[in-house]
Length: 570
Image (tube, rainbow, N blue to C red; front, side, top):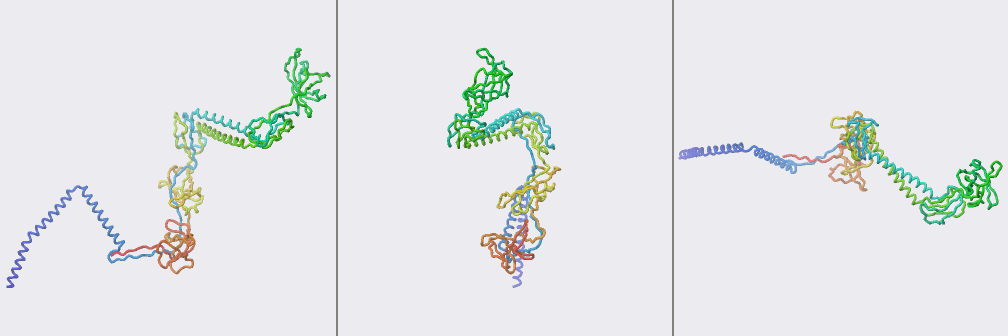
């Protein structure tokens, strides 16, 4: 019975196997057909679409990988466990240099530009752009009538103001009214302190009565018998006396009397001892060959000279001694005047004269530029004219630059500017190939601040006699601002800036080991591991990585640098 059942079972299994084989084969055939269909679809798909599918697939894979890595980094993976690693450094001897790198625009150290301020016609151009010229080399000629007119007009203005200034200076000297000769005051104006006088106002008449003049007429019969310097006798009836006189001049006029006589005249001078005055009758007799020659008629005495005393300034009277018939001497102060107004006028004229002189200088320079010569040794650059061109006013026609010396503008930050001195050498490079040496020419003390860092301008001079350096282009420079070949150094990360209780800032490093005697208690915005103590240090120069330690710690001292986080991966 059992054998029958086993046989039936095997038969059933075989039957099932035989019945299932066709179904499995069918499934395999269907999968192969689908796979073939997908390949065919991929082949039939446009290449552009296939590239797009591939690109997005790669992007998704990269994003998935980044997410997995980030998760492991921040959260740890598997059985791994994150931990902090303390980084230390040791104080040691080394060398350090602070280098300043940058670029600047090259310029000719000296350059002169010729600009015409008046219009004209270019007649000749005697140089070409790029020519090397020496001072005095003729450059061009331009015909400009306007330039000639401008010079003449400016010169006239200058001469006019010069005359005004000369007169104003003379007027200002008249703040103290003084006579130029001795004499007697007449027709005086009564002045009191505080009174106002105007410029040119007549204040008195001054008569020179130290001598008097007498005009006499004599017969032509005595022509040639009287001459200048001859002594004569003058009769003064009012005083019933005679006084000596001197012939001042003889005038061979032709006066005809009613009797038909012909007369000539003579001027007689008489010294006045004080008793004579104008309008006194007088007659002068002359001895000729032992005979006395009388004048045709008596004359009247006149003052030797008479003039008005006028104020040369306007202002307020300070003091006055003007009195009629007062005898005064040459140079004596008669009236004192406050000359504030006149001083203001003088200053205004001086200012106008200076401006007029500048205009004349400019006009003359422009006229000279119409037949210009090179003002300096150098190279002609920017030549913009040709013969026959009509030049408008204010046109720059040529520039000459002395390119034998080039200047470069650079900057040094506040950390290194104290080490930069005039005379230091600078390495320069232009366009990645031309290497030359320059020298620090000037160091400015005026800084500019950008992003909290102060920078100080410096000027670099470069000899360029061979013309190797191109002007008006950028050049790279490298300057060793400071250097120390044997000093204690540490990485920059080891040094912290902190504040003491009194508010002062100090630099510190954290020293490992027992607490040093010079340790200080400070607050820093980071976690410092146990066993490290803050010690003040004095720092020196620094580069991009290290800093000089001048004092505070010794060689071999271990200091805290930073904390890094390491992670184990599961």
